[in-house]
Image (cartoon, rainbow, N blue to C red):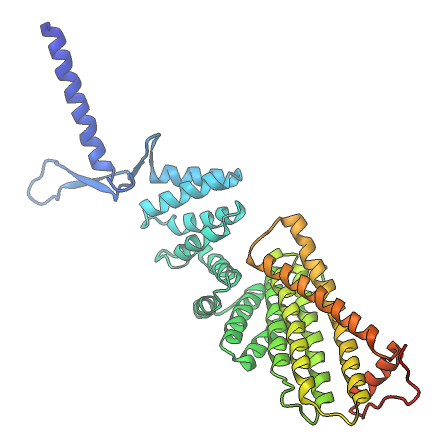
Length: 409
C-alpha cells in the first residue's frame, strides 16, 4: 500500500471517530431518544467569570433520520393540520417523551390524543390525554384534555376512575362551562349507580337534565354524546328501581306493584331511547341490551310468581295468567322494535364487539319470548278484548272474574 493511500485510510478513521463522538453527545442509546446534553466551552477568564455552557439541541435519531425534538414537534403539528393523524401522533408522542420539560410537551400529548381518536385509535388516546392533564407545565389545552379523558373513561365503563377525574376537574376549574358540567354530572352519576347510591345519582342526573333542558340540548334529532350519557344514567336508575319491585312472596297490593314496575320499565325505555339519539353505536347497543334485560327479568319474575298464587277457580287463574301474558307481549313488541333500531346501526358501523353480540342475543331471546306469549294467548278461551278488560280491572286493583258465558274457541 502506498504512502498516500495509507494517509487516506487514517484520515477516514479519524472522521468516523469524530462522527461517533458527536452522536454520543446528542443521542441516547434508549429508543434513540437523547435525554439532553450540554458541554462547557472554555473561555478566557480573569478568575471572576464562570465557564460559558452551550446547550446542544436534543436530537431524536432513527434508522432513517435525525431530527431535533423541536423539529419533530413542528412536523407533527403540520401533519396534524394536514390530517395525517397516524404520522402526526407518532411524531408528537416521540417528541414529548424525549423532551417532557419542553413548554409544548402537554400540547403535543393533547394533539396526539386527538389524532389517535380521529384515526380510530380511541383506546390509545387515553394515555396521551392523561399525560397532558397531569403535566407540570400549564397550558390552556389541559382543560379540554381533562374533559376528553373523562369521556374516554366513561366510554370504557371505568366509571369510578371517570368520577375521580371529574372531581379533580371541578377542583381545578371552579367555573365549569355548560357542556363540561354535563360531562362531569354524567360521569359521577354512573359511578354512583355502580355503588348502588341511586339517590345521589338521581341528583346528579337531574342537575344535568336541568342544564340540558335550559340549553335545549335535547331538541335536535341527533344529540351530543355527553347528553346521551346522562340519559343512559337515567335509564339505569329507573331500571334498578323497577327491578327492586319484587312479586315473591305474592304481595297483597300486586296490581299496584305490577303497574309501578311496568311504568318504571317504560320510563327506563324512554331514557334509553333518548340515549340512542346520539347515533353512537356503543351507547345504542348498551341501551338496547339493558331494555332487553328489563323485559326478560320481568317475565321471569311473573312466571315465578304464578305457582305461588292461589285462585278461587282454575278459570280465574287462567284469566289472570292470560292477562299478564297480554301485558307482557305488548311490552315485548316495544323492546324488540327498540333493539331493531339499535342493530340497524351495525350495517353502517360494522361494529362487532361484546355489546353487539349481547344485543343480538337479547333480540333473538325476546323474539322467541314474544312467539311463546302469542302462542299461549291463542290457547286461552278469552278474546283480546276480554283480556284487555281484565287488565284494566287489574290495573285499578279490582278482582278479575271470568264471565260465565266464556267458551273455548
